[in-house]
Length: 208
Figure 1 (cartoon, rainbow, N blue to C red):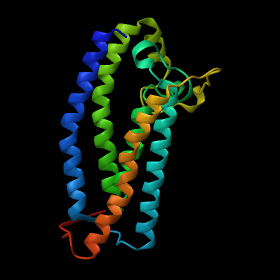
Figure 2 (cartoon, rainbow, N blue to C red):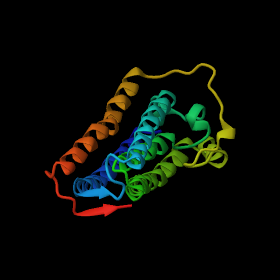
Figure 3 (tube, one colour):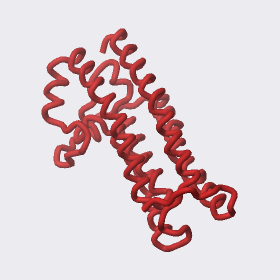
Figure 4 (cartoon, rainbow, N blue to C red):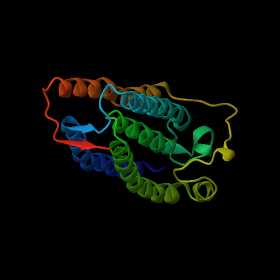
C-alpha cells in the first residue's frame, strides 16, 4: 500500500475513533446508573458475568492471534492465512466479541447486545473504507481474496495455516497494551457493582 494512501486511511481511522469515543463514554456512563434485572449475587447474574469475562478473554486472545499474522502487512502485503483465512477482519471480529463481553459484565443481555452492535457498526464503516483502499492498492490479489473469504463472520472450513510465519514483536506488544483496556473492564465493572450495592451510586434504570 502506498504511503500516501496508508496515511489517509490512518487519518480516517483516527477520526472514526474520535466520533466513536463519545458513544462509548455514554454507554459506560449508563452502566454507572443502570443495573441488570438479574440481582447481583444471584446464580444467574454471576453466570452471565462469567460468560462476559470469557468473551473478553476470547476477544483478547483472538486479537493477539490475529496480530501475529497481520504483522506489518497492512502497508506491504496481504495476510491470508491463520485467522485471516476464515475472516477478512478477525481483529475487528474479536474486538466486537470483547466489547460484547464488557456489556455482559453488567449482567444484562440488552447491554451485551448493545455494546457488541455499536462496536460492530463502527467497524463496519471503517471496513468499507479499508476495502476501497486495499482493492485500489493491492489490485487483483485482494479482489480474489475478497471473493473467497467472508468479510466478518468466519467460515471455519476455509482455515489455512502458514508454513513459515513471521511476526513483529513491537506490533504484538502494542496489541497487548491495547487489549488491556478490555481486561481493565472486569475490575471496573465489579467496582461499579459494589458501589451500587453500597448506595454510593444511584440505580436509575434496570435492563433485562
